[in-house]
Structures are given as C-alpha cells and as structure tokens.
Image 1 (tube, rainbow, N blue to C red):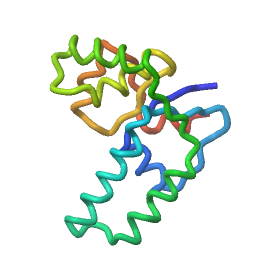
Image 2 (image 1 turned 135 degrees about the vertical axis):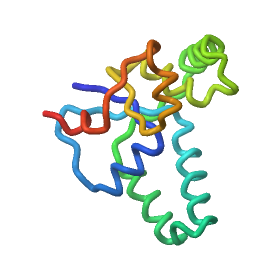
Image 3 (image 1 turned 90 degrees about the vertical axis):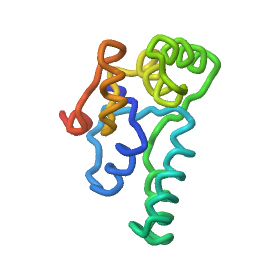
Image 4 (image 1 turned 120 degrees about the vertical axis):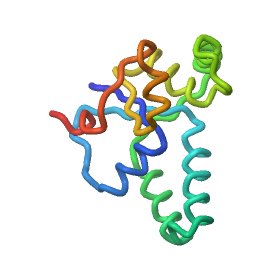
Length: 133
C-alpha cells in the first residue's frame, strides 16, 4: 500500500476535485492538519473568497477523507530535529517532513516553500501520484 503525507492544500484540492483515490492509497497527516484547514477556510471566508456554508461543506468533505492523523512523541521529536536542521522559524512544516520520514513513501504538497524544504530531506511526489495505479 502506498502511503502519502498530504498537506492542507492537498486535502482541500482532493475534496474540491472530488476524484476518488484508487485502492491501495493511505493518506497521512500530522494532527495539526485539522487546525490548519480550519484556519485556511476561515481566512478564505474573511477575505470573501468562500461563504461560511461553502467552508463548512469543505470541512465536512475533508473530514470524510480517510486521512490517518498522527502526532506522537516520536513525530514531535523528529520534527524538532528537522526544523533545527533546516533553521526553520517553527516546526509546522517540519511535522509533515517528520511524518513522511517516519511512516510514508512520499510527501504531496502544493506549497512551494515546503517542497523546497523537503528536497534532500524526504521524497516528494506530485499531486497526480495520488491517482496513479
């Protein structure tokens, strides 16, 4: 089974596109994914890009995705070390990198800064890899 760590933007694109994933895919994310999604959607509503109802429906669809959320001590410790190595201002992105290193085949992100940080740290896969058979 192929395991991919996904970021909030990837989760939103998955529900927006509505294309079902093929069998044999496991999606993973750090537990902070929930809070980041909430913040992204709240910001979009505040900017007038979405209605509150649209944001609520998007949250419901993301909650229906089968994403295994993880956030144990080993993940946090690994994220800390990765953030230090990258001289990152915080550990948020490092949690995605740590989870990829510990449990997944690759990271799928639409965030260019996180993708740049990931190079040489963990394998990256394009969004389309989620649908390859």
